[in-house]
Image (cartoon, rainbow, N blue to C red; front, side):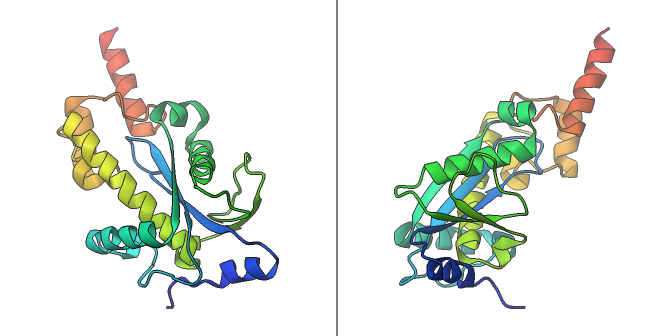
Length: 210
């Protein structure tokens, strides 16, 4: 199977667009921490080698590629907080993070390629949603790498503030170690209360205290 290429970006160029960015988010599934999105513009004349869907790369490869992307392109990062996730739901929150990532770019784009099948409501720019975009478009692949590197580092920092949940390894995803820690140590301020495993523990605690 071939990896991502630059054909979506080239098609947009042919249609008269000049500044095409790829957007992806990471962190929909975890029980803790924010959802993070990255928007990336790649220079068509100087594309980094080795870009792929972040899930197919090692941590070492991602770190090296993130540096390359920063050197050769333009990056915007956006987040939606745990409070926002609980308030508006994870899908809307991930779209909010995407909008913020696009707004954080140093030069506004005129065309956006987004990973997934839905376009965030708040976007007024021409946008194309691409299912499995991180394995098809180089710009989205770059955004997936940047977002994952950024969020993983953030979860390592949060793990130091809230030890015992293994976030430095599981990035807040519901691994067995994380679920066991939730039962034994309880819920932290950075856990997503609207997510079922967290909600259930809070509910049990509420019943027990009555």
